[in-house]
Picture 1 (cartoon, each protein chain N blue to C red):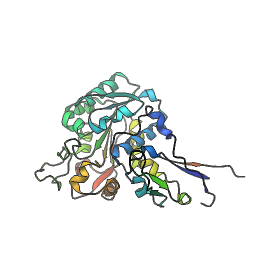
Picture 2 (picture 1 turned 90 degrees about the vertical axis):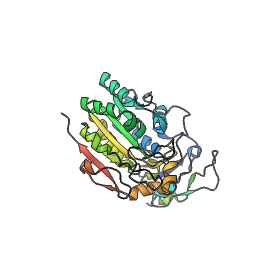
Picture 3 (picture 1 turned 30 degrees about the vertical axis):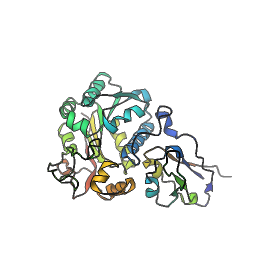
Picture 4 (picture 1 turned 180 degrees about the horizontal axis):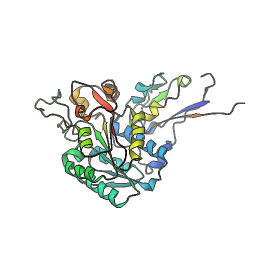
Length: 74
Length: 265
């Protein structure tokens, strides 16, 4: 199983809702601002992600996508 | 989760729901952390899950921040003038029976300007879904009290009006489906929208959403994340609660849930 957290930096407005709602502390706020001057989140610990999708569901700016791809057993 | 493999996180590209928006329309005009964005995403997800064609849906919205929703969606859209939003949507739903008409309104559109039209819509059993985004403040005039503002807010000293009870109004005017949620309960809101869209009658969903710019300054809660947490801590779910008890009070909790779900007929 592969987890991918896809963050579109240019759309983020730095409201920190994704960091607040994450139960396993996967995301954190980056120090470098984006083009609009807001600090977007970055993926700190992807291996802790349990794919609940709350950050994607609650992001008001459509900037996060959490996808998991089921791979066939080898 | 031992089989998890770490993949490279790309920072360019598009969101999967971008086909529902006109090209190059993002980022939106809403403030950082505004609840409207969450509600729009939930609505789009609900439409995607119901597999309705995009030309069979029409979004009508009026003025203000909520009025921008129709401009950002790729469905059939009508952006109407102040006070005519319910009338326009009701006429549309009566003429085109196969169309699903959704109205996004705020308090100024819904109660202040077109309450009489809403009563007519309920009486005629029009097939309409009204999503009322209730941020308990006038955003443009910064701190004006609206009909659903809680009694005696801390910021406004001369605000002595009792709040209006929108679920009770909707039930008594004949709505078949009445519910109230906050944007933090996005999963519940999504299934509520699916339920309401599958009915062929008037349904009203009241979403108590934070206004991050002005209600924060007025109520001294904090930033957007703090306000979402405030709404989640101070809301209690009571399914099928009698609608007489559902007005917003400043000292007690916001009651959310599904209140009316009548069968058709």
